[in-house]
Structure formats: structure tokens, C-alpha cells
Length: 476
Image (tube, rainbow, N blue to C red; front, side):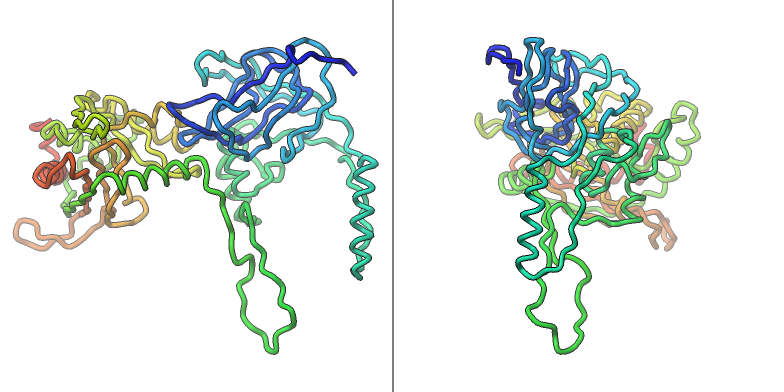
């Protein structure tokens, strides 16, 4: 065995990949003990309260130990992997307790251009390299454990057939190709990617492929409490629920952070919510016209685009609503810029990325930014920086067929606008009842910063623009 000095072993600690984050969950290890790593190579993917991030190692060497298994939440500053940087042979080491086994001799995926994910750690030059794994024949210890279990079962009167020891497959399979967010989705849903038929280019597994696999063979949740068997058979057949009676899902990552933020917001800022129902028929007609505009071809043009623009115009006319409350200094901080947050439901939970300096963007630029924001959130690639510094938020509950709601403020913001479903309804128009496109808007605001008059003016301005969108020209 090759000896090593402790000085040759470097510890890589969990970094703060966002602003002031205290912990992160290890989603996936891309290396195992014995693998050779190079400076800038991505070794694992972690999920913080804000985003999923790949971590590159900052030095060359051989992996000595993985300190934590996949699915473990680790505090920032805690060592998660050790690397021997002496250049010597790798010592024998056991993998992390719950880490998933990696198929032997995996073919390398095509290298992709990678952007730096952490300042100072560099860029991975190629895809992760893995050392071929040894055979999977059971060890003597494993055989002894199996025999002990068999004797225990037989001693309790159970007729249990002897199970042969697992053998290595005759043909080793390649690691399925899928992006990290898709791998995370498959892990959450309990889907083995090796069983999924890919439909993406070059055999890449997509989200739709994973959902199709779930539909074909539904899987149980992460932690299941099984129903206990009855002590004696019932006297008569009784209808029962087919399946586990409870499923427990650990609260972590984005959902944990969102829950804490919402509780803090709800019990810190005194919320007031006002509602208005408005005829948006002219806005819907304008949306159809804009879809034919050559300057907007290929961009995301929908009602949300004009609602966002209406909110920006209303803030321009009533700037005091774009503010925050500084409790420590007992000050109201007026923002002279608008970072427009858009609440997005993702497989990782609710996130609120924002469009920086949305107030300065033209309609085509705003449409482009909305499209990029939605696509990035859907792919699970929203960065921590994209979710920081928001000043006001829109949440579109109408996409779920909901008429309206009372949204909770995003922490640090003074207002949030909820947009309900747009429906054809009977409406009095020019003295006659006619079918019109109608929606309900709800504006929640922090009553420490925004009084009823200011909140009402903002909501009334938004409604007036959506009813007569030509006001975008005269007011904007």
C-alpha cells in the first residue's frame, strides 16, 4: 500500500454558492474514490435554497474519500471530498454509504462548453473521467451476511428459498444521457434512467421521457410508511385503500427556503390585498396583433407580457410602491429601478427569478427577457443571482384556471400582483350585455410602506391600461 502524508491530502469544503446561504444538498456525485480529477473539473451537483449548481474541484489529484452520500444536506464550510494531490497511487477506499453504484467502464459523454459556475474555480475542460470499477462478485463478508439472514428467516418458520448472489451483468450498459435537472427529476420520482427510452437528440433523455416512464409504471414516494398487516382476518370483506396510507417527503432545498421566507414575510409585513375585475378584451386583441409584428417574431408574446408592461407603467406613475422596509435602520428604501420578479412553479418548487432593470426595457426586450426567464426556470438552470435583488413580483395563477388569490409578498418587496384566469364572461359593454374577455387582478402590499390610497392607485392604473392598452403609449 502506498503511504501518504496528511499534507498531501486536500479537503474541498462546501462553498457558499449564493449570497449568505448556509447549507446545500448533494444531489449527485460525478466521481468516486480512486478517480483522477483535474483543476476545474465538476465533481458534484448540489441544490441550495436558490438553485441547482455544479461544483468544480480547484486542484489536481486522486479522489480519496467522499464525506457525504447523495441526498445529504451539508453546512457551508464543511469538507465534502478529500483529494490526494501528491500524485501517488490511490489508496483503497469505500464509497459514501448511500451513493449509487456507477456502472463499469462508462463511455465518456460528448464534452460541452461549460460556463464558470463559481468565481475563482475555473472551467471544466472536458467531461468527467471515471476509472473502470472492479468486478461485482460478492465478497466473503457479503456471503456470510446472506447466510445469517437465511438462517434467521428459517428459524422463524418462514419457508424461504435460497437466493443466488447477484452477478455482474454479462454486458455492461452505458450511463444514460440526461441533463442534471432531468436526473434530479428522475431521482425525485423514483425512475431509473436506464429503463427510460430517450427521445431527445443523440439519445438524450428529456423531462417528457421521465414523465412517460412514470405514467407507464408509477413509483412510490421517497419515504413510505407501509400499512401494518391486521392481526387476524376480518370477518367480512372491507374496502381498503390500495397502497401505502402515508408518504413522507423531506423538506429541503428550495421548498424549505420558500416555506421559511413565506412564514417570515407573512408574520413580519402587514399584508393588505385589493382586487379588481377588468375587461381585457382589447388587450387580448392587441396580443394577437403583436404576434404578427415583425419586431416581435420568435419572441414570447402573451397576455403576461402586456400585464408586466402595465405594472411597470403603473410603478412609473406611482414610484413609492417600488420600495422596501429597512427594519435595522428604521428607513424606507425607495428603489429607482425595477427588478421584475416572475413567480415560476418548477419541479424543485416555487422560485422567483427577476428581470434586472425591467423598467428600462422596450417591449421586444421585455418579451425576450420573459422568454429566457421561463425557459431557464423550466430547465432548472436558474442561477442564484437571478433570484436576488427583486423589487416587485407578478404571480400568474390564471395558468392553473384560478380566478384570483391573495399572494404573500416576496421578502424584501412592497408589492406583488396576482393575475387570474382570463375567461369569456357576460359583461356590460357600451350599455349592452356582451361576451367579453375578463380577468381578476389582486395586489398585495406591505401596509407599513403602502397605504390604501397608493395601493389603490397602482391597481387602478394597471386595470385601466389592460382595459384600454393604448394608454401604454400615452402613459408609458
